[in-house]
Length: 165
Length: 164
Length: 195
Ligand SMILES: Nc1nc2c(ncn2[C@@H]2O[C@H](COP(=O)(O)OP(=O)(O)OP(=O)(O)O)[C@@H](O)[C@H]2O)c(=O)[nH]1
Ligand SMILES: [Mg+2]
Figure (cartoon, rainbow over the protein chains, first blue to last red):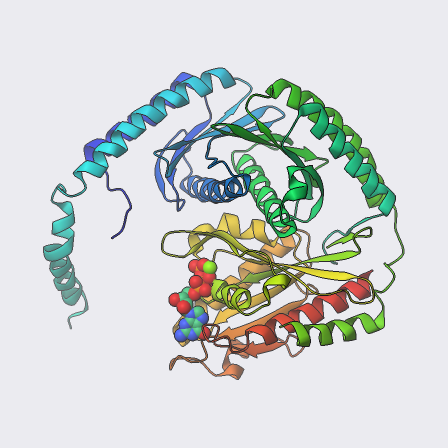
């Protein structure tokens, strides 16, 4: 079965709120939540969609490479925090759950200490949300079933009528 | 044109390794590794010596890959400023990657009991020293290594026949 | 390329590039499974649960000394899915040679063409001349009924005669080592020319 998490509309809203709060509190440039395949789950402060997609695929690539590096280090190492420091900017990432990656990009205006603290809080909140999403996975909110049966049929009918002469 | 070529003399490599050794001892790091940005392993010391050399090269490829993604992320977020360092924090050990002149990556793995400010300080010194040595390595145009002549290709072809 | 004069090693980087699902990873897996263990490192695969490459696969091969020099080949694949464009370019950095793995199936022709064009664009951005970098094209999945003819593939991809093209069925290993040998020979002779 596909292990990808499905969030309900309410959960997705809480995720977006959480990312927006993080953005505001840290005065960061942008905040991004992606899964291990680089699929974008949520963002704040990054208006450009293509840019957000590129960033989330890159963060997933780096995440995969880091986990692989950890295997060579022994002691069951898991790098839960990544920090990149440039001359006057920074990128801070933390793992959520641990298959999601939360990334914060900021410049000299933000303080790393604050970024760390608020990211930690955001991670806790996001872990609560993903835990709930996992529990609710089986129950579903109806959308899945609708997509499966009826929706497929409706779509097919719709397409038929589109091409009908 | 081919990709930029790195060709290090025996003396330069000895200088690089001495730098890495010093850094490892000063910081009590588990190991230290130097790779170029394309992932080619250049030198290392510490626990690395007891590691399978092929794993060491894989580590280099991964470290360089990581640095490349981070640098690209910075570029996408509109930061033209130079990359400086990258830190991965785990539960009991951390890995620290530093940029060396935009062309090399210095990687240090250390236990979390070691002070990160000490690692920062000594790394900074090492980066400066390495930059000097490696800058010279780029500048010197060395003669082609003995052996890389016309029959090399021929011999390589037959070696492949035998190996694969 | 990196020459280590003390260890007397010649390190070269070869990248397997091509559209999604064309068989790049399958090439490396086959090479890994059919080379003597003492000649190869571990196969590192950064992939999703569905076995799709997310960043790269990496395999190192080393040959015995030749005239006192030990050649080492670092083989990489790129993630072919359109979505991973940003990562794809990074893997090409420092490539000494490229194997373009095309999917021979007729319905994949647009993907092949787009992928090849993108690759040349990325190489240019990285400061590598796409027309002089050693390139071998592999027409993969020759076993499938929908596979287009070789001359069709050549002309659609606009490959001039100087570019070696090989047919393959990577899942069975047909053409895999021939492709590898061809690119290695090209890369080495290009190194000799430029050194
Ligand atoms: N029939 C047939 N199938 C093949 C051949 N080569 C590869 N495949 C299959 O094609 C699928 C994709 O192969 P991969 O090697 O994972 O493709 P890839 O190019 O690495 O794909 P990405 O990582 O997404 O870029 C797998 O199911 C392979 O078994 C071939 O020559 N013939
Ligand atoms: Mg693949």
